[in-house]
Length: 231
Picture 1 (cartoon, rainbow, N blue to C red):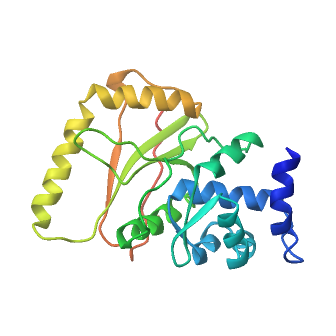
Picture 2 (picture 1 turned 30 degrees about the vertical axis):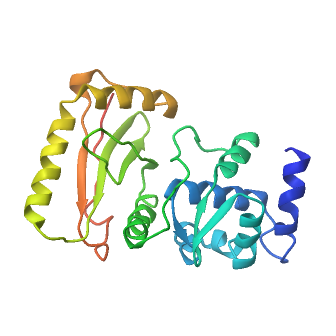
Picture 3 (picture 1 turned 180 degrees about the vertical axis):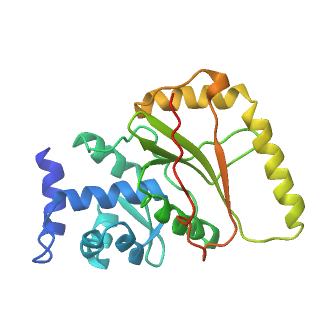
């Protein structure tokens, strides 16, 4: 590990008598970036020990060092410097398709997304979350589940009920039906699968699911079963 990096992190590690682990710091940076936005109290949803390290004092310190940004009170996102340091230390998880540095302010819609994303990463076969964007469709996320040599792709649409609700859902449905036949989706996944270390199937075999989550109060994991998809 680069001495300069270690020196920057040390004050955070020794600010308390517990949880003196560099890995906890790296995990805070990684999951903050993966989820895009996270409230300080939500780190415990990832791992209880992680929340013990993500104290207000420590998160403020990471902001001061340029790794995190507090976009609203107790709501954080990870800056590009966080990804750079994870690359420098050869962090154990794949960093190649992490989302871009967020430009929002952690509003209610973004935080509703975080609630679902936190449930998603606890799924048994969770592999990663991706954030693709197509000309006519911007999903909230693409969930990748992986089991040995098989994987499943599920687009997540996290929606609050709004005016013209039925028409809104029909329009979304039509967009996904269009995406299923769009060569640009295949091109996207062909590139993404290489970066993730996954095998890309031939175009006619590439499929995806769409999960509309219209109430964050419901258990996202309930009834969500992995189906083997062999490439």
